[in-house]
Image 1 (cartoon, helix red, strand yellow):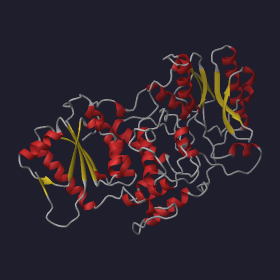
Image 2 (cartoon, rainbow, N blue to C red; image 1 turned 120 degrees about the vertical axis):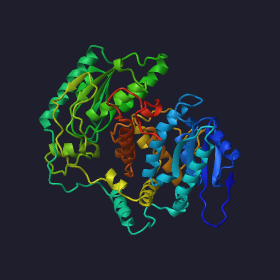
Image 3 (cartoon, rainbow, N blue to C red; image 1 turned 60 degrees about the vertical axis):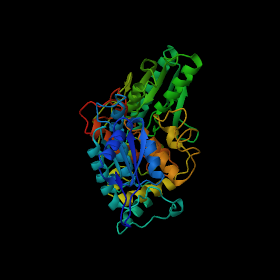
Image 4 (cartoon, helix red, strand yellow; image 1 turned 60 degrees about the horizontal axis):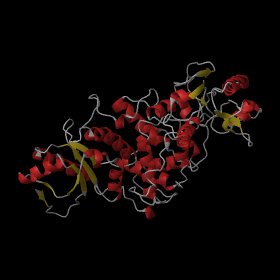
Length: 494
């Protein structure tokens, strides 16, 4: 039986999503038993806790909720058998993402209540309200007028740390001051790999084993870019150097989809495709196979051993005798893979990773984690405020292959997705969540961002959570994201 507050103290607005079969009935049991709980609760009845998607929870906070409580059936008692399994798996991941973006951990809770547990329902509600109340109103729903690209809200004496991080994201990347010499693959070694790639491509095309070879070439502006070779006389265009940054697996889902539509075949294109991949990019092959996006037998993977990819146009400057400050890309600085996990043909000698690699002074994940909750909110809102909604991050990602983005389709929760601050945050956080358990850390999304938003940090924190909770590392085996599967009994869940 809800009781109203008898004083003028702040009372949080709590939205509770209750499973119709168990927790909602548990709330009725609490009422019948005259068990007291605060009147802050606004209960929404849902068919199953599995229907409470992360997008709904983010939308709830966007609409002004101070706390969200999700209550479902106990594991093993779900009316739909596995609905609460998915809730139990995705809520901790969403919790980690929103906490990283600046929402207090106490504002989102998942728990289980059966139909007969009225006392448990009352206790959980009382505990949740008591935890949220001291936090005050949630700042998640921020007025756009309060934010500008060059203005950071003061959050205390530590706010200078946020300003320092923001200044680093708006400046050009520069060396971190290390005296370590970068690992520069010699021109002769790269030329040798180039010759081998050309020979393999010519052999595959001449024998009719593949219809196209997707690799790299030097463009008209002197930069390395993707190349599509369909005839053996064109293989001389193919090259390999330490500027081959593009993740070419991005083209595979579209290639197979267009072929299925043309041939009306479920098994994919009638012709095989040859693809040049770096070790990190090869992880995408396993993810796409797990999601039935590609057919392995119809992709000839040409794996290349890699010593790291340069940030910017370093390779050509080096070969031209110019004095260029070499920096490795962020993904290369801590990469431990030198051999592709998937390949049909391997080119280059595989050696142990030469650490450390010198790189640009980019913001690290730990630096953001060390910020307070308010500071993280300031940091990310200031970053999202700079987003121009160009969708380059989505277009370059090999895993963002939905026909229509959830945040733009007509029946989505964010109809008419525009350029407002909250809408931009919803897009970036929603995209990061959809990549949980699927992102292989190629960092192409961050590389192509025209305003330099450190998008990869969102993916990194979720990758850490996936490994901590589910012992899952994307791309190292052909298995789907654990978020969409059933609990195995080994995960640490509520």
